[in-house]
Amino acid sequence: MSSLLKPFSVCESPCERRGRPSPAPHPQPPLQRLTAATALASLPAHQRSYAARRNLAAAAVGGRKITHPGKAILAGGIAGGIEICITFPTEYVKTQLQLDERANPPRYRGIGDCVKLTVQDHGLRGLYRGLSSLLYGSIPKSAVRFGTFEILSSPMRDATGRLDNTRSLLCGLGAGIAEAIVIVCPMETLKVKLIHDQCSLRPRYRGFFHGVSEIIREQGVRGTYQGLTATVLKQGTNQAIRFYVMNALRNWYKGDDPRKEMHPIVTAMFGATAGAASVFGNTPLDVVKTRMQGLEAHRYKNTVDCAFQILKCEGPQAFYKGTVPRLGRVCLDVAIVFVIYEEVVKLLNNVWITQ
Image (cartoon, rainbow, N blue to C red; front, side):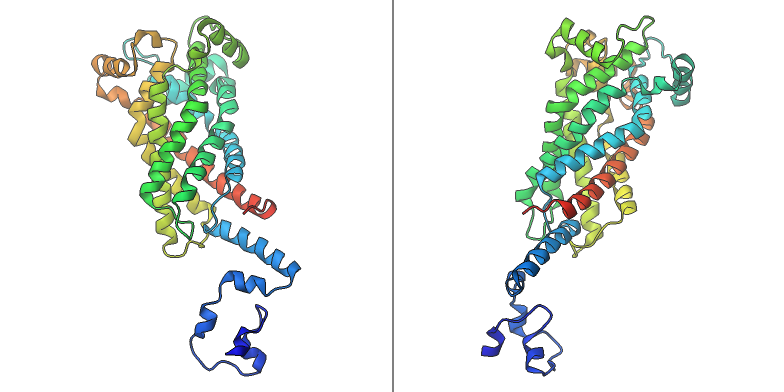
């Protein structure tokens, strides 16, 4: 027994040092009780440092290491910026269809007609009107979302870094509320006003900064927070649904092996599924939010009155206006964001070692 207590390297067992291979088909009990810390402690200092860094990176990739909030913020910001540049035209079409009220009567007959008329009147650049407001906001929005999610979920994970589905829903809800208040509401208000302004015969805003300055000059900072209640409801339920579905699918895929890596294609498929679930779950809130942030928001007393007026004047189907373009945009959005986020985190784990 005393020989088992003598120091030995990771590559050399006590039995090997004595020159006799172990006949037992199963590991000896003393070896079973050795911890990772004991194994690392037996290494020379320079090897111990390297092994610790390598194990941290491997654990982070495999899901056992909780993502550092700083990494989550940086990776989320990068993912958000790339994603919005790819998917903005679908967001533009969705917003136009939601603003196109039946009582006007509607200007557009559908998605294709909206794209056709926009390109006809404003060229291809017309499909990117309002991009700047979302681009300036998407980077901090995704940063706040993933950073908040990691901060909230860290104390809720088990020893392997696994987060159960119910807690992922609560953390997603918290992340959605945080991003709604800090970033999304003013960003979405500016986006909707800029897009709505383009529909006018005489557009008032010459660009993003001019639009922002005019809105604040006329309405104050409160003018950028129209529809806050609807936005909080929309973003909170959005992220609650997305993180819940994504976490449930991830837990199902990894099973009992939290170190099992997910291929980017698998991550994209799970992300698209989570995005689709959020679209069908909260498009009515998205429609109300869009109306409350438009140039004609003064017609509604509050969020509840807006929902009532839509139901009364346009029928229940109006709550699902823009579902198809939003479905395409959100599925692509969530898939891209989760893939880029996961890949950037893996890269950061190799160059930014955290405890």
